[in-house]
Image 1: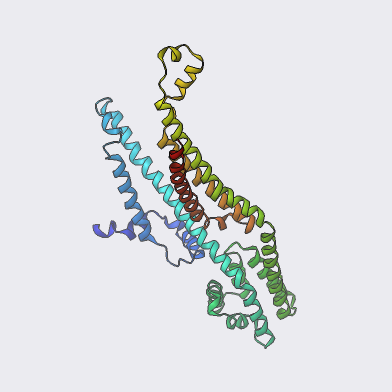
Image 2 (image 1 turned 90 degrees about the horizontal axis):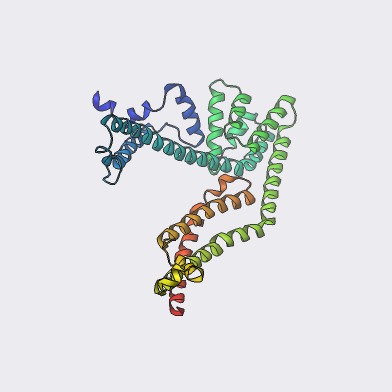
Length: 349
């Protein structure tokens, strides 16, 4: 029993209260995860404890110097606060990572559904015209190439077979992925069923409308290609080159200032000599400026990818897939440009 209580599954369940487990399961189901990964949560707990111990028992950590300076009670309070605050900080960080990861998977599934929805509606309309009822028409319109949508329609069919009304099952499906396209299509379908109109023609019109909206989005994205090219050039090409130039100029200036020897009288008397004396001081670290360039390039690439995704796709979530490409390209070009400019400036100086 003791071994089971410390297993990954048991530790993971301990961190998910029973009252919210159904909500967590529903959230994960949108991302295509049918079972709650309690083992992953348990492994995360042990990773957090390991990271906390690694930081606490690090010889460079200041806690080891406090024992000779402060009272034992103060050390106890500090240690207690550390072992409470740091794990909570890591837990919050992992929760954010998991949340973003599953949100992106849910968003991708929503895009996959919207992509094949017109074809599914047209097949359903053809089946209705062949004399099938709406539930069977939707069931027989399912194709393996529909992917996520096929699984959702199968789930709707299972709910109707178990006694759930078709309109309730379809409404639940429409609200599942927070997709205006799916929600509007299902609401129109339900309104048509309630009014008793020609469902086949209605489904064809809905499918045509979705395809027209998709075409308009592509045309709008094509019209703003110039802005995308400008932002991409400024981020991937111009920014790394300018940072590399600044970095190498700093190296050259520091090298020149170290070779200049000023008389003590000119430095202490003020004026131009005092200015040169201040320039020769170690005010800016070369290594510090190097990491400043890396951080600024990463930040610039992050926000540029989000801006480009918003311009082209209309959604910030579309920009996350551009982030690794932008960051990798800008850092690689910065390193290459720094190397080339370093060789070029060294031959001049």
